[in-house]
Figure 1 (tube, one colour):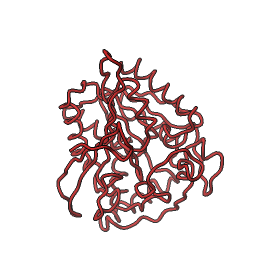
Figure 2 (cartoon, helix red, strand yellow):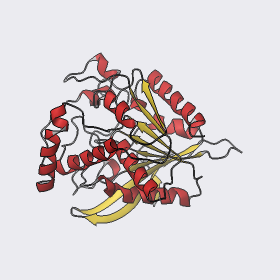
Figure 3 (tube, rainbow, N blue to C red):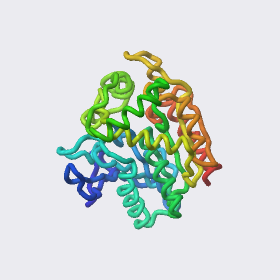
Figure 4 (spheres, rainbow, N blue to C red):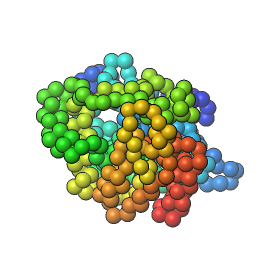
Length: 321
């Protein structure tokens, strides 16, 4: 059943029922905003967006941009995130990123069933970018890739931090994740990024702090083990089967307290890693570094995000016509 979403009309939301797991019932939610086509204009295609970690879909400026170009916009709320999070579930938890294939495949089936063109643009932010890329690579490998293009927004393609964390630290996480998957991984958490985004602090966005907490959700060993397995696959090289636009900021900032730099740089990931590893996703990769962008490029200050939208529009026109 489709109903009006919490964002209000014209956004709608529907439930995708999924097989139970060890915690019980599982669902995913699919948010939709129809294309803004004038009378007589043809639908250009559909965009399917996947959110990041400690995230859900609230980025209406992104949806409005794509619908203004003639794309139907869909945002899939993956299991145990945001709208899909049920009271009995561990937020954001999985043991294998391929678990999400079930709801992604079903979403694509629904989009195709509704008569949308086969021009499907997949969009992924941060962890969602990693999930989208790995899913497309699997679908390319089995000969049924439904996408036309992939747009990545600060995709999480490596573990930020020291060499030790990426090597010996990862091996320790792998062992812990195998033995005690729900164990919480100690880490330093700041509220800087949330303060950059939320309108109660320094930002302009109004979002649900229950679904996207100021201090994030705990990181659990089994989930991080799954993410690092995804990183290793990317580093070895995969083929997503479609042209890729990878967007990220020009700089990263590591800080424990909010500063003005936080509103113009990535305070979550290492943008050098993003730029480096993007080229392992296939043969047709475009990397665009957006000056002044924050971690979610499309949540940057208005002038910056408008510039980023312009880059996307140009790329769609010439690289993925």
